[in-house]
Structures are given as C-alpha cells and as structure tokens.
Length: 311
Picture 1: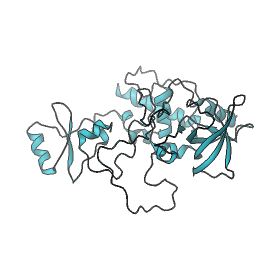
Picture 2: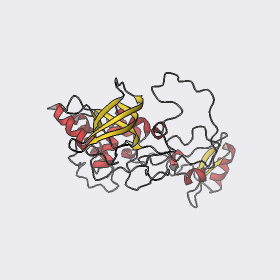
Picture 3: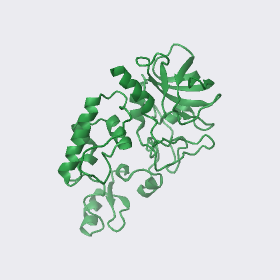
Picture 4: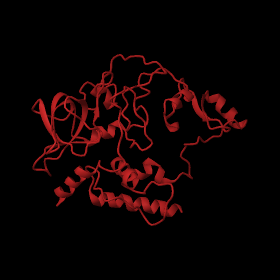
C-alpha cells in the first residue's frame, strides 16, 4: 500500500493547475510569471535522485516514454549512455532532438514499467545556457570532491544571468563573485528586500518615507534613526509581533520541512493571508517526495494551531 501511495505522489505531484513555467526555448531571457512556484536550487538537488544533461533521441506517444542520450551526469549513478524515463505530465513539451537539464525520480520501487520519471523542473538548454548553468548552484556542485575554489571571474555589478529558470523568483547565485552593487540596483535585479546585501562593513537601513533601502556606515545608522530618517527595524525584520507561521525557523520547529512548506503553499490554504480558522484544507494531490502522510498531517495540524492562536 505504501508503494502505491508513493506512485500516486509521483504521477500527481507536478500536475496541478499551478503549472511551473520555464525559460523560453525561443529566447535566452528567463520567462517570469506571477504563478511560478519559487524554490531554491539546493532543494531541487536534494529531492531528485538523478540530475543530468541529456538529449531526447526518441519519444513514444503510446507509453509517454522519453529515450534520452546522456551527455553528462551531475548527480546519481548510471551504467549506460542511454536512459528511458516516463514523462506523460511534463509541461515543457520536450521533442526529439531537444537537449535539456533533466531532473529525475527513481520510481522503480513503485512501477513495473518505468524506472525513472521526468519532473517538471527539467528545462531545455539554449545556445547561451547549458545544463550546468541552469542548475544555478555555483561555483561547485554539492557532490564535487574538490571543495576548494581557486580563483574566480569578476562579474560586473549590472550583469543579468540569462540562465535562471522561472521557478526561481530571483537569481539564486546572484552575489557569487559579483562586484559590489547598490541596494536599489539589487531590487531592480528582483533580489528580495530581505536578502539585500551591503558591502564594506556597511549596514542596511530603510527610509521611512518610501521604504527604500540604503547601506550606511555603522556610526551613521544611529544618527539617521534619531533624525527620523529610518527606524531601527527594517520592513522584513523579524520582531515579537511577526507571525510565527511566516518564520522558517518556527516552521522547522513544528516539523514542517522545506518540501512540506513548498507543497502546502502550492496545494493548500495554509499560508494564505486570509485565514478561516477551520484548519488547513489541502487538495488531494498526493504527498511531497520522501514525506510520510503522518508527518505532513502533523505539520498541517501545527500550522493550524499557530494561526488559530494568532487570531
């Protein structure tokens, strides 16, 4: 029964109406969408058994099977240069000849017909963006045995990475090796306000008049606060009044992992701003990969308690 449930997870987890959109195959620019599901590359790395650069050599419409020539394996162990994977609900519409970064689940424990399943985080490459760059983990991958980085390029402050898939809300490795960049320019690059970075030992403040960020010297900070130019707490600073269900550390304390939180944000009302007080309602879409039902139920129950106690 457990394997049957896991199989339902695999065939249903990525088939919601909240479809993930990707980098357009017709352009080198990332495609943005308000409905995108935002994750971080390290989570994608952790939840997939196989990650590879491959080229579609054949597609079987009757069995939804993609036959993929392997160009490079980034994660996992494969004994062949050809792999077959099920992908009947893949949104990216791969066709013969397409080269892509493929994220795969090993579904052999629950499927007699398929060993691997392509997930919707797989994305086509382009002349500018190869598979390695689409992973968005730099300068080295988590499984690289050589963890020492010697030398690095100096990236201009205003450079925009054309290889950011749309399921990332901003460039995940934006600050890696980049020249110092002003906070307002960081916002123009879609960096979230709570991730804005200051340089040269300066500290971040937010202007009271319009909420705009600024990096100032530590000795200047208190003077600006006293003059009313800024306040001591930024707009995204966690304070005693911040709702616990919005704080990642608090969610972790009540047993909600990153995978659970992403799943609940997509398929439930757990993180809606408006709360009805009746508990978490979730679509019958299956479970996040690697999560037991009892663990998700416990997370949902605890989130409900946090939200009910807040009201």
